[in-house]
Image (cartoon, rainbow, N blue to C red; front, side, top):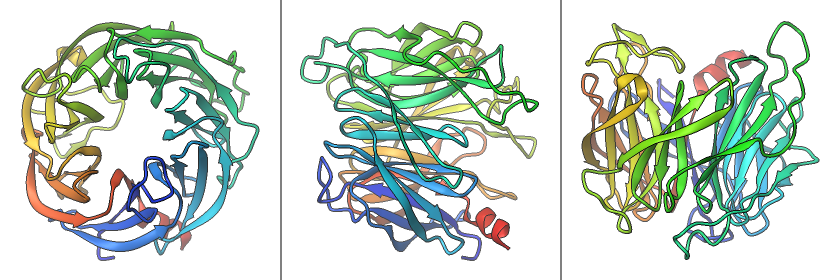
Amino acid sequence: MDGRRLLLVGTYTPDSDPPGEGRGIHRVWFDPETGEMTDGGVAARTPGPSFLAFRPEPPTVYAVNERAEGTLTAFRVGGDASLTELGAVPTGGGSPCHVRDLGPEQVAVANYADGVVSFVPTAQDGTPAGPVGRFAHRGSGPVTDRQEGPHAHSTAVVEDADDPRLRYLLAADLGADELRVHHYAVPGVGEGVAAPRPEEGLLRTVQLPPGTGPRHMAVNGRYVYVAGELDSRVHVVLWDPRKGAGEHLGSVPATADEAAGRNFPAEIALHRLKAGGREIAEGDALPLTSTYEGRVYVSNRGADVISTFAVRDGGARLEHLADTPAGGEWPRHFTVVRGHGGQPDHLVAAAQNGGSLASLLIDPDTGIPADTGHRLGVPDPVCVLPVPINRIRRAAT
C-alpha cells in the first residue's frame, strides 16, 4: 500500500448496546507523510467491537463485543490486511468495553455493566479459550446516576520490581473510584524457569478522590496517569513496584477550564518525543531537557478537544500546555501514529458523535497537535488500533 499504515477502527453496530450505525471493524489506510486517510472497507463484521487490542505473535486482533451478554472475538491478521475470525467466548461479564493482550496465554477484559474483570486464556494460535477467570467487585461513589455500583472501564500493566516474570494489572473502576490491583505471571519470561503462580483475586485497591470516575490510564514508569471521566481531571498516582501499591498525589483539570459535569475525558495516552533523532522507547528514562520531555494527551468529550500536558518533575506532575480542537464531536478514543525515517508523528482521533476520524499533526518540538484538515467518515467510531501490516507481510515471506 505504498508505505501507508493500517488502522483498524472499532464501531458501535445496530446489534450492540448501545447501538450504532457501524458495520463492525473498519479498515483505514493512513498516509504517514500527510495524515490523509483512505477508506479500506469493512475488515470484519462483528457486533459492537468497541475496543480492540493487538497480539504480535501470531498477528491477532482481539475485539470485545459490547452487549449485555459480553463476548470476546479473535481475528487472524493476513498480509492483505484481512481479518479471519478464529473464535469467540463469553467474557463472563456485561458490556465489555476494554481488552488488553497480556502475552502468549491470556488477555484481560473490563466489563463495564457489572464491574467484572476477566482473564481470558488464549491458545498458541491466539484463539480465546476457557475457562475464563472472572473477578467481581463491590463499591459505589457519590455520582449516583453513574456510580451506583462497580464499573470496570479499562486496564493497564505495570512491572513487578522483584520478579521480571510477574506483572500487576490495574483496573480502573469508574463506579467505585478505585484502581483495582491484580497480580499475574508472564509465561516465557526469564531463564526457562517457571514463573510463580500469583494468588488469584484482588490484591488491593488504590483509592482516588470521591467522584473521580476513573476511566482510562497511562503508565509512565513509577507514575500512573488517570483520566477522571466524572470530575474532568487528570490524576497522578505514584506507583510502588515492590509493594504493588499506589498513592494518589494530586490532579489537574483535563482542559484549560474546570468543567466537571460539562466535559467527560475519555482516552489518555503517554507520548515520548524523539530525542536526537532517536525514538524514546516505552520505559526509557525521559531525557533531562525541557525540549524533549514526554507529553500526555487526553481526549475530552464535551469540550471536544485533545488536551496536551507536559511531563514535569520526572513524571510526578503534569502541566497543561494546550487544548486542540479534535476535529469532530465527542472525541472518544485516539491513537498516536509514529513516523519512521523522518516522517512526522500524528494523532488520529475518533469522533463518536461526529461519525468521522480526524488526523492531527504533532509538532516535533512542542508535542502539541494541530489539525491537518484530513477527515474520513466512519459511522460511530469508538476505537482506533494501529496494526503493523508491513511487519506482518515481511514475516510471511
